[in-house]
Length: 158
Image (tube, rainbow, N blue to C red):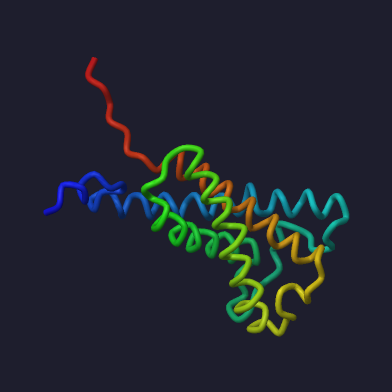
């Protein structure tokens, strides 16, 4: 086996843990960073959509907050997989960029049409900016969570 492959983080044996950390960080980040940013933007009257909604979603009636926290976890796994080799501030900044771009594009061009909504927030600049801000905040929070929780720590012998 290539010795460089053994040095690449996360190591194969640590990958499942890293992906779980990505899921947990992504789900928690929805509650703190994504919805926190949405709450701030709502309070500033930049967006009419109220955060922390418990309205049922289709087709299963799951509360909206639970649904987006679950999908935030799935996105957290998708974020953690390619960024596992990064550390510290580099990881956090890459995660923020990932969040601002990829989930936003999927929301605009895949999810919106499935929900009968206009593509790219209808091309309304402020609505588009809100999407980038809340998703970027989610990425930032997920990156912080991964940076803080993602590396296995060894207890030093006393």
